[in-house]
Image: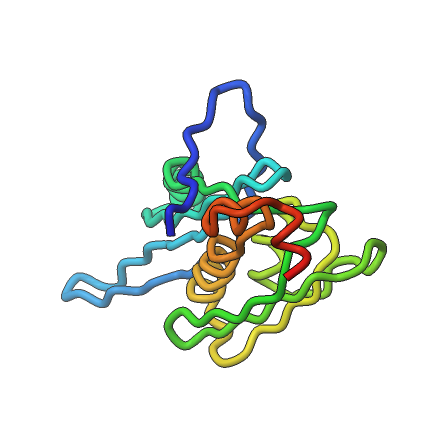
Length: 170
């Protein structure tokens, strides 16, 4: 994909959402060492989305590292009238996600990690289903991968080298 890595100006307001925190225990000769891993999703609510993973000895430090990482890998995804242009099914690792556009007023029918990603991207009406693994790391990555693979009508017309009218006629 010639997909849409975005550089954000400092004036754009990004909203961060904490998806999951995982406590990891390392057992050593001196006892147990606890560290934390936090997965964070950020977005402007208008089609720009990014995710990050932060690991640290304290929860707040892990969340901050995750936010910093999320701001570094932002992508632009097509959101039309609060929904997605077409349905798509994508797998990442053991997680499979299915996204389907919905009529205005339907709301977001999605759970857990998928909901956080879609809300951050600015999608308000969508039907979503996760199959397979419910691991939040893979669900976040699969949902962002699905959003990145979606193409709007302008992109399709440009790729085919035809006008917008021909895209919808044939």
